[in-house]
Length: 172
Image (cartoon, rainbow, N blue to C red; front, side):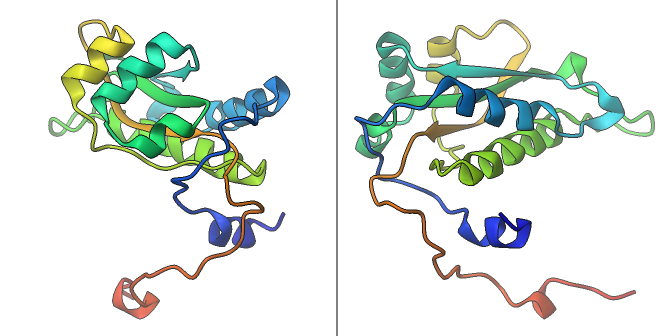
């Protein structure tokens, strides 16, 4: 698929086909696309957590209590450690959130390419999610996404509400 068509096709999916499973080869292609994401100083400070066991999914659902999330057969979380991320020497900036965001975006775009639905979620309760995922000291998750086939097949390009390009570009 043309990349520009893919960008238009990607949207937040909130209705999943709970009966349709994801082929392992498809999942591995998606995870590999995320693995190839750039990171500051190529530190790759991430671990991709594929959550598909009923027990762990139930705990994750407690951190983000939306009924539609329960339809997806799995949730992907990308965890990282600030100590592993690049730090700029001039100030306190460290790249972990940026690095994990780029990797999550690669994952979401690859999932769209494969005909799967995702929805970027950051509104979870961090302490409940950390407990559900058994995060260790210094580990953090900035976003999670359900992963599954949309209940409304096939994926279609929906009109996006966005600012005009001229409203968000400065020519210097």
